[in-house]
Image 1 (cartoon, protein in one colour):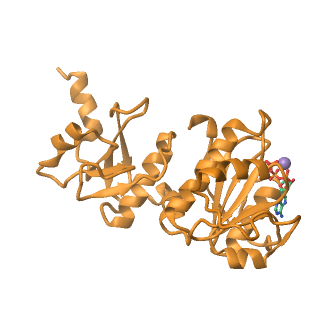
Image 2: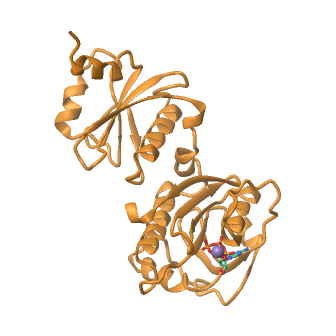
Length: 270
Ligand SMILES: Nc1ncnc2c1ncn2[C@@H]1O[C@H](COP(=O)(O)OP(=O)(O)OP(=O)(O)O)[C@@H](O)[C@H]1O
Ligand SMILES: [Mn+2]
């Protein structure tokens, strides 16, 4: 007689590695002394001082994105490689781990989501802060109305060279950084107006109201997206910046790098 537990055990049979997504201390302790390869911890902080650790810069409510991020990060650290099969223990409904997902490490897992944070010119914390602003703006809108916004992050000198002002720059002589508490308020206020925000590698807001003029050649952007997304995508091909775009029409936050769409998030899920 086979029990359902036997069948379910097949899910984790013969895996090459176990990834624990934001485990509690006691869960991590249970795995600490495994005979096989130690588990990889994927979490916002390395609370348990795991030897094999991938930092999660955003919560990634979408479990697929979370797993993709963890696997790409782990590949980058040399914790797994193409062809491996991984058991990912994740919290789908909340904090404690409540699910296990078996996934092979394949080229198609590689969406560039890790690369976006880890290998951008801008500081990963700056990238995260800009995502936070875009997500918050997407949730709340401006006085209840949906707003769109375009943030170009990193390689600011080159971005400035490939753009022109649409209006006076309110950040001209200021030294405001994306992480500053006042910034959320300011960016929300200015996002009602046209153009892009330009942000430096270290998070300084260089300009608002920039009209981007990149070459649109060789840009691979899904059909149906308009000028804001096209300009945002294209500038990331012409420069080493990344673009984070909040769409006024569908409310989604998208990120572009190297001229391609690498991430799509729904602010309502955060
Ligand atoms: N080249 C550009 N540089 C900076 N901002 C731009 C550029 N092109 C368009 N925008 C901004 O995007 C706004 C919306 O344009 P459009 O509707 O064509 O874009 P979209 O990609 O469909 O974005 P949304 O999904 O928010 O509607 C414009 O009002 C303008 O503020
Ligand atoms: Mn539009």
